Amino acid sequence: MSPGRLSWPAVTSDTEYEVSGNAFLNRLFGAHLHDVPWTGDRNSAIKELGDRVRAQGRRPYFVPYGVSNALGAVGYASTIAEIAAQASVMGFRPSAVVHCTGSAGTQAGLVVGASLALKGTRVVGIDIDAEPERVRADIISLAKAAADLLETPFNEAAVEVVAGHAGPAYGVPHDATVEAIKLAGALGSPRARSGLFGQRARRLDLARASRPLAA
Image (cartoon, rainbow, N blue to C red; front, side):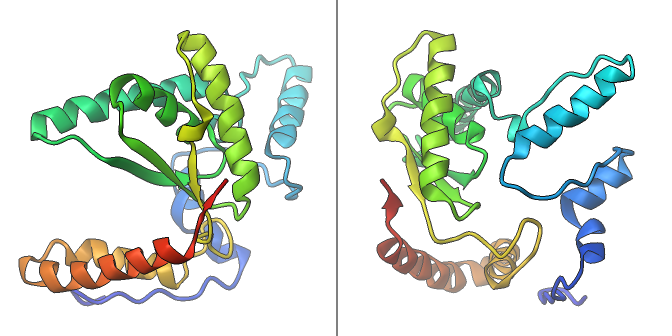
């Protein structure tokens, strides 16, 4: 691959997925992976595996998909304190924190954390599951539970989920993925920053105008 150019072959089989991204890192670090059929219920397969391990006399600790439970959301709430501290050192206050959202725990924690440490800062989640209504409902449920643990109020109106950006499947790159990587690389070049960033920013503005938030 030459500097400044990017090509990405289409993912055409499960084998290609297994040697890329998170799946590759899991194997690289020695994780023992269990393939399960996709049913939409992420946690039942994890619980069933835990039951089998427990029956073997071992003591498994259940970590839900995406670490998405009340305790996991509290952990993500603490992330906002770090963001606030780092932003203060850099001399600015973020108007928004934008991130991908799916299993809901990350955004639940960020919303609760922002209500405490970054008041007035929006937390905007980009739906990656193509299920914005379900994602938003899960965020609200987990955020309420996390807020209860922290003994702080929670306003569900603060939950923003942007629909319309989910890719074809988890771990499968597509045109928007490649464009984002190109943008990240181009921002490292002073000559390319101004024109290219302006072009991408205009496209993002058009995307925002045409893809409403899930209510």
